[in-house]
Structures are given as C-alpha cells and as structure tokens.
Length: 376
Image 1 (cartoon, rainbow, N blue to C red):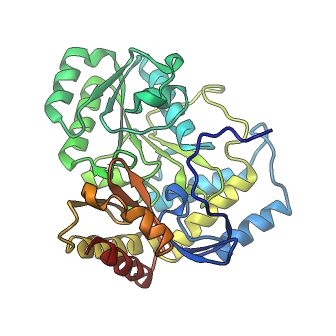
Image 2: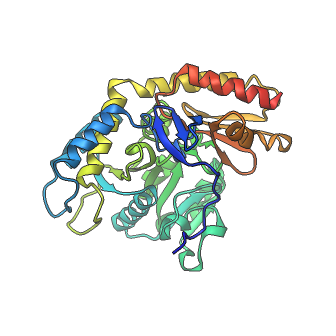
C-alpha cells in the first residue's frame, strides 16, 4: 500500500526536536518558526509536557465519555481561569475542523436556523460544514456545497449590516477568524468584531470566534478576538491546545443549555488529550507565555517593518505575516534550505511566522539576520 499523495513534501525527515529547534536525519539543526501549523505552543518536547503525558500513559490512556473523567473537569476549570471565561462551558473534540463543525451545529440547534455568514479569505477546516464556510472552492467537494452559506467581504461593515437587514431572521451564525491564517494573516478590525456582536444580539444569531490558529495565547491575548472588547458566544480552539497531541474544543457561553446526545465524540476529551492540554496551560501560566508572545512578537514586527523590500507586515503577537513582492518569492525556500529556518506561507507571497510562544529574542534575531541577507 502507498500513501495517498495529497501533501507536497519537503525532502526533510525530522528525527529530534527540543524547544524551538528540530534536527533532521543528517543531524542538521533547524530553527522552527512554524511549529507545524501553529501547533507547537510551549516548545518541542517540553519537559513538563513529556512528564505529564508519560505519567498519564502509565495510569490510563483512554476510556470513553461514558464514564467520569476528572481530567476533563480540571481542564475546564484551568481553561476558564487562563482564558478569562470562567462561566463558559467546555466541549472537547479532536481537531479544529471538528470544533468548528460542532460550533455551527450548536448554533443551529440554538436558534433553529440554517444560514451562516462567513468571509472572503476564510479557512475553517476540511470537514463537511467547516469546508462549506471556507473560501476555497477547490477543496469544496460537490457533496459539501450548500446554499446556506453567505460569503461577505472581510471587514466590510456595510455588507454585513445589509445582509442582516435582508436575511437576519434566517441567519444562524457568523463565523470569523480574529486573524485569518491561511488567508494571509489579515486581522479583523475592532469595529467589525463589535458590529458582529451587536448584530448577533439584535437578530439572535450566534457569534462564533474561530480561534483555532489565532487563539491560545498566540497574539498576547488568550483569544485574539477579545482585543475588540466584546465576547463571542462560542470560541473554537485546537492547534496549540495540545502542543502536538490531537485535542480541540469549543468554549460555550452560559446561555446555551446542553441536552444529552446533543453533541458527541469518541476520542474527544480522552485521558491523554486532557493531560496534554493541562500541561500546555500549566506551562503557559507558569512561564507567562502570553506576555512573551506579545513582547517578542512586537519586537519582530517592529524590526521587519524596517526592511524596505517588504510590502507589508501584518499580525499580532507571534502570528505574523510578511508580504513580499514576486521578485522575492524565493525567500521562504531559501530560509529553509540555505539558512535552515522553517516558516509557513500564504498565497501568493506571504511568509507566515507561527513559532512557539516561548520563542526567545535570540531566536528572533537569528531569523532577522537570515531574512535580511535574503531580501537585500
């Protein structure tokens, strides 16, 4: 049997990892500023994380949600404390797409409606409804297509107001990334997020804050959306939640009243997943990683803006997009194969930086030196 060939692969095999560095099979060391799609939040093989998982695995690795799992309660309490959403409720799943899928389903159960507003440039996942609200027709299979999704221009308050005025009684939810990741590190404006909140209140629609990539402390706030000063009804999260272990969740406002069987999952909230997620929050809290993400992110953004060749630097904290001209389209590849630095990308020519939240200034400077050599 062969692998189903859907991933364009770099010819690199990673065999060891620690902190913000990884090593390949030839013992070549790399600086990891991508973290496998914003997944590595507290650094590779963090000692507390490894210990937490090892200890749990020696006790019990898995049992289903048909029994009490105290780790779930501990995780909910810790997440409420660190995120500032103590009165919210937690439902645990396995991936960002699954989190968004369940959030949209929950919204529809809540108000009995079908239509969802999403935005140009959005990426919410690849499962049935999550991909339907993703702005990429190429990955939307015919079976995923639905007339219930309304795509509006990102950050366009007039279009949003007009749509609610004409179809408000049919709109179940608005789903939005606080900062679009795949869409090119584009930030939703404060006024736009505030407008979503006010219109959802007026029409009894559900405001879903997709925090899968832009959440979990990456921007210096736990959920990037919160910089607008209003709360969403549901926050979805994954990526950095388990530092590499598959775990995701939705944080649900108290106005939603659950009923048995409303949502469900086999693997979501298993013992190992909860141990991983607790370890991440414990390290984030102990090492003040949200503050570090803000400080190192601000430093990187400030320094990157000094390069005249850069078209624009976007983002917040350690979620940074560097838009380059076509003439510098080679920079990402050169960073990897010449300077041994992993970064991400967004089409056509945006370099994405999504490192661990404990990235050091020395690592930031290492990147800036290499980047400077390639763009000058």
